Length: 347
Image (cartoon, rainbow, N blue to C red; front, side, top):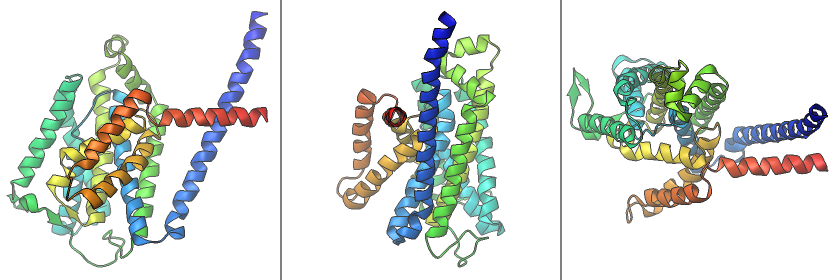
């Protein structure tokens, strides 16, 4: 009798999960269709530019979440990986004439190599000590770049930064007259990052990272090497962030240490992921969709009068999220989808 009862109870639960999965899939497909049609339906250059910035931050926050959301360590120095990718992409193109498409990949590889150097000693630390150490590394790199005009014959131009040489519209040079091509490039990059996160959740590496986040000592007792798998995750995250830094440089056609390697940039990525729902596939995307327009509006209209206002607003939103939505914006969205699936099934 108990077995029959359990089977009867399990059937509605499976149906609920199936209904939820269908609702989630429909929502993702609908969002994808809207994203593909957006620059065609609303071709205004400023609007498309704003959408590109949202997608770029969503991509970068997803890259941050790839390690920090699943490992459980808070990195406030991820901007250094974006800086390596951005500077490498511009220098490889301007000095060697190599296409930025290859330069972005090279920048990602250099960022991954840098992450191993940084991560090996820092992953031995826990909690706030890890976060403080990542800030220290990023600030050291930023200060060094800002005060270095030339390094080994390579012009870094110090605080002035580097401008991308203009060669006219060219796919190989990653330069376009309009905004729409950039939009679709970053959209593809974001989709690939989301797919990588989705695959991580279902991979052996993902299970190991969740085990380390849950109880590091217990995971180590089971034969899982925290240092090894955390470094692997950090290297992948840094590679993705470095590629994003390369896109940033090519899109804005300019790169400097203050913006791309600054702590503010790292804080943006962390807050977007945390508020949206770290350790989830779509949480960073939700956080970027909410916070990026706020940052752009406050910088554009109040940046000269009240600089840093968007950080204050971020802080208020973060406090409210911690108090009322500790799992991020993704949690109420899941609840809504679950209710809709139940209502649709009952109807």
